[in-house]
Image (cartoon, rainbow, N blue to C red; front, side, top):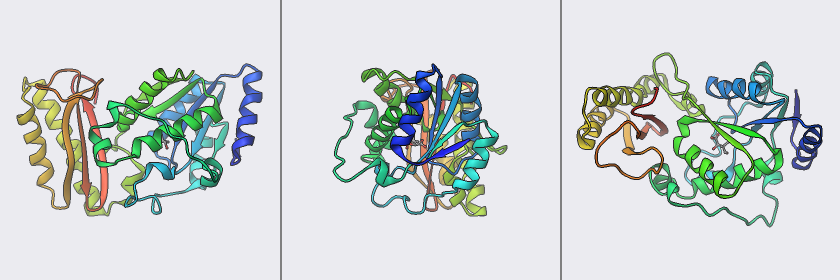
Length: 283
Ligand code: PAF
């Protein structure tokens, strides 16, 4: 496994591999890898001759009061996990390498970015879209793997890939959960032991909404009301959003159906956690 930090070196390396006809599978991340990332890497290993992992805490997708400076980092640990998952190339550029002086180009996104995390994190998805476009141009992957936990991010990247004819197959992978149900996230490391316990309100709300829906409840108000009760019962919780939306368009729904997305963002203390489920799909 090779670690590359220089953008040009990475681009030249993959161009050489492409000339040899190698198929490149790519897992973009911000590092501090966990089992969710490992599941993407294992799937990527099956799908490419060369498996590339990028580790880059992208400053442009963080708002001014967000956790850019405190975002957990562990390059050494990440490289060990990457090696165990069969990664060939780790691309870990610097912020100056990705955004040299004079950088000014953005990607204009559409309605998918407006609701949910787009509403509470203005500019976040523009930062994601720019960095993913840049990473695709540098790494030139045939396929790229993303987790479903960032459901809206994945929807936006899929749409951007179609709209801009990016020659990359986008593969969405199931949310990986801790045994007690908490969706895996690098940000879980911020939680105190008490908050870690309280964070289970997200997956409990998901289970409740799925159970009610499976028993025939389709009222948006009643489904969200039950979820809200579970979350507000937790002392350190504050709800950013709890929403039922169409899973393809992300538009509001009048009643829940099998293709409805239940998405939530909840702060436990100062840690913002997200989770989601599509009601008719697997958990
Ligand atoms: O999901 C993430 O880790 C990031 O948003 C991504 C896609 C690597 C872009 O920085």
